[in-house]
Image 1 (cartoon, rainbow over the protein chains, first blue to last red):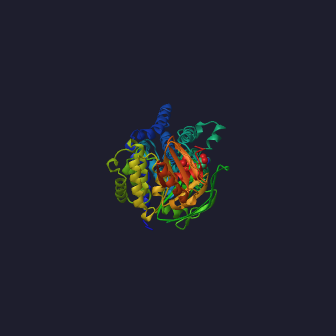
Image 2 (image 1 turned 90 degrees about the horizontal axis):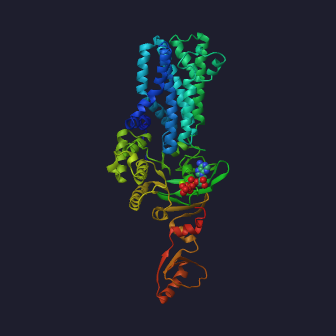
Length: 250
Length: 298
Ligand SMILES: Nc1ncnc2c1ncn2[C@@H]1O[C@H](COP(=O)(O)OP(=O)(O)OP(=O)(O)O)[C@@H](O)[C@H]1O
Ligand SMILES: [Mg+2]
């Protein structure tokens, strides 16, 4: 038996090449695709608030971008799995599920580099925060990214058809980004509806970001609770994604 | 290379039995062909052996590793092209093969080199930079096969690799598989019985989830009642057979199936009648019809 030394770097790069670099080179319109949704909502909120909510919306757009990574991951994985049977080929090979998915997740980031660049510039220009605040926002975004990637992977393994995964995306995007107080402060929502918004993990991520930019004042206790819940949900979902998702079909 | 399957059973959705206590004991460097009608369970069997699908019960051992308990070790040694695998349309053939090999852990440059060799061996070298979506159906199939044969896998699963290939391409693929099989086990399903007969060092006939028979083409022949066929080209014909089977193929063609001695005993008769005839060993398609019957389900 030939034994080869397998490079994890190559394995991850393969996912990035196939799912983002080559795809973008082939269909440049994909670049605009990821840009459009976060930026148009940002524009709407900014204009409607006469510019006052631009810093909040800039954070919101970052969150939406992270959530979009998860929903696109879900669609891409489902397409490659159901229409190309690529995932079956990967399953019947030495590529571990984790590495394939990790590469695919990174490829979604690569996809959104234009959007991220623009949003980071907007954040640097219009959002006032400290260095610590900046770091908090970074970890906040990384957490919500992990959350949505896990959710995307979990859903993709259960979808048997691309139409179904479009439906998943269509549902996830509004309930995770448009509706909850991601682009606007939670104080704008009257009670009892405010309680509902706490059903979405993006609300906690937004609160944490808004707390760092002075648009929310959570207090130590609520701040800690927000982090706990956000991290809790993320860990739970990642666990579920790893345990429950169907790599080998039943 | 070795595959042992122990009572593999697959029940879909709690009711449909697609595989029924399948046992296999393959110890071979060569080609193992699986034939059977649509829905016989070929794909199900391949997907279970290649760790894509859980069996409902039973298990299999590939090169000493259990598909259930040591899937990781099994996967180190296998590669598969699913029946419905499609080339990713936005890639080129060379990108397709290279990325697959990179997923298997080869560096970019090594993968590209191996990929070019594989494409060349499949006669796709002039198309390596063409977009996959511009390839013909057969070229896409060849590309999928090139992808896995480029790898180091010692057990390769090909589910209907030649469906949609023209006759020449099919024969080219046979040549490639013959070269590859020296140090590998290739599990192949096909609906072309000629292909199974020419390629298959071992052949298994699957029907309704059960193995009807397995062995070399010689083994299969020796087990059937009528291993010889006398083909008579004459419009009229009357003959008594003690134990044999006569079937009229067309207005002036009769096939008589029987044992070797019985068939040769009829030869003198044919000469006397001055009719044109041939004597042949039955082909796999005759054996297949014999075992699984006509296409009442197709
Ligand atoms: N995912 C599934 N869910 C339910 N039933 C299935 C599933 N896959 C296959 N079957 C059933 O199991 C049986 C065996 O299917 P399988 O795909 O293994 O047949 P096959 O021999 O490969 O046929 P073909 O020559 O048409 O490819 C069929 O009757 C099919 O309807
Ligand atoms: Mg099949």
